[in-house]
Image (cartoon, rainbow, N blue to C red; front, side, top):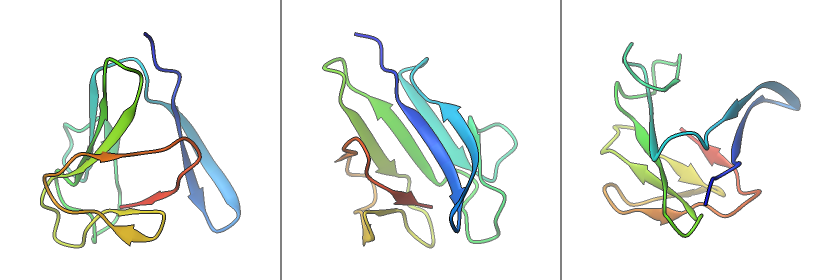
Length: 93
């Protein structure tokens, strides 16, 4: 089933951008020029994290071994272990 997930890029109280992340099986986020979701901050790794879509419609977040971590609802997720990303949950790269 198609995923209609949207990633909201927020700084403080302001939403800077809304990015559709439902058109592919996965998206890579990081500083590298060849990623799907560019992260323009020195604390981000070149290939920082992946957003994965399961055929059930669930969305998972996968830290790719980033130096500074990926945080879901304020808790650091383990590297290389897909973590369910519930609708409405916040993530910090």
